[in-house]
Every structure is written in C-alpha cells, then in structure tokens.
Length: 305
Image (cartoon, rainbow, N blue to C red; front, side, top):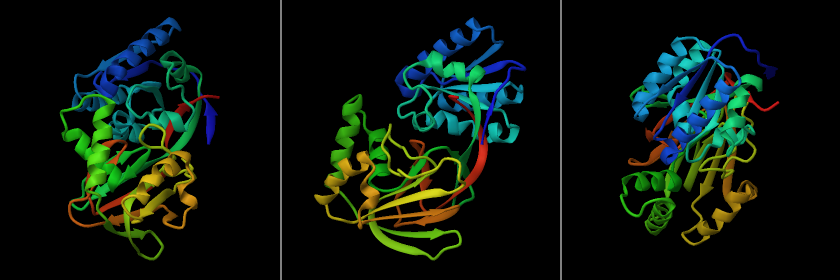
C-alpha cells in the first residue's frame, strides 16, 4: 500500500558514523544540510557506536518526529525497528552502509544522499514487511532484508574475525578460506502450515526482499509486502560445482535449478547441526535453531513516487 506524505512536524535524522566505514557519517551530513536548506525543522542524533546509535534511535522516536531519517546501513535500520514499529513513525533511508539492500529493493537512491533525504519530505509512504528472528532462549531481533545460514553466514563470521587484509580483499579471502573447508549442513525446515523438509545443503536464505550482500538477488521472486518469507536452499552439489552457483545467484537464475529448493511461508523454524550461525541484514543473528516470522506491512517507508 502506498500513500503520499505531508509535512506536520520536525524531522529526526539518526546518523551512524561507523556504518559503511564512515559512509553513514558522510551521508548523514549531506542529508541534514539538504533538509535544512529546504526549510525542515531537523533534529540530529549521532552516536559513536552501533549500541549508542540504537539508543539514540529510541530517543528520537520517543520525541515523535514526522519522519525518522536513518543515515546508515541495513543493520542500523533493523536496530531501531522495535520503537519505530510501535510508534508508526515513517522511516526514510539515506544509504550509508555496506550493502544498502533495503534501499536497493525500493528504488531509493544509493549514491545521492540529498535525493534520498528529499524522500522524507516528498516521497510516497509505502507499507512494507519486516521480520523477526526468535532464538531458542526467546531472544528476539528484527530484520528488514534477508537472513542467511550456511556458507555465506560463515563467510561473514570469518570476515568479522579477521584483521588482515583490509577493505574488500578481506571478504574475498574469507570466501576462499570457507570454500576450502566447505561443509554440508543437514537442514531441517519447519514452515508454518506445511510439512517438515530435510535437505543437505550449503546455503540457506530467508528473505523479505530480493537482495543481500550489496545487490545479490538470493531470493529473486520475493515480494516485500506480501507477508511471506521467500526461502532459498542450495543443495549439497559438490565443492567445485558450487563455484558455478556464484554467477547463477548474481543473475538470479539459480532458483530454476533442480538442486535448489524454494518455498514461501509466513513463518519457519530453521534447524541445523550445532555451530551454524545465522546473519540477518549483515549482522550476527545467533546460532540455529531459530524461528523466523514475517510481519505484513508493519513498517511505513518513504519511497520514490
């Protein structure tokens, strides 16, 4: 559902300066300058860490802005979702992270912070889905794009532990090292209202949106407002054959393969051998088992008209 916005109060701008290796801070500065130049009453909230940014997000929402502008990445957005969803305050995204996949999904400008900030004033209001991830101990976290558990999540985990090399090369090295120790995971999936599925595989993604990892269409048919999770499971196809999946996944054609299982569900419980961790919105979401649930049209997002 999409509506047009209107100006009635102040705009809160939440800046995560550590997001995207400093991109969040740069984007936030541009957004603030743009909104003030257009006559908006802007209140700025800028933390020095991810935890401080989340706390400031709660404070910003509590002060009842017309719109909350988040200058950061998908992880920053998901960290402020609980108070945002409870309040109903619309969200405007100024991309400043590593992946920026929520913005990509909805056509929000990725490389023009001023144009993205304009959406807080001029954009349409679209109701979109969010998701929750519930751990075995009852801990709940929110996400807005894709959760993954397998080769991709282990690569994220390794990248976060590495101190060398720096920059994009660190991720590429992590990919290679995880490929060398590639493991098969005995996944057990329990979709709501359907039979349990057991399948050995290498990669598992559960998406509200199509993209993860900065534009990789791992769930190419996902609809961000249908209240359903799109599940993509790449079977255990062999160490060298899995290399061919890289180009297929980037093209979004992997779901046509017989060695890929796809399904949709409003909620699903994921189980796998001990030690497999999941990542959601590029952030650590904890070890499996986990229950993932979609919440239909729970977030109001400012998008291009």
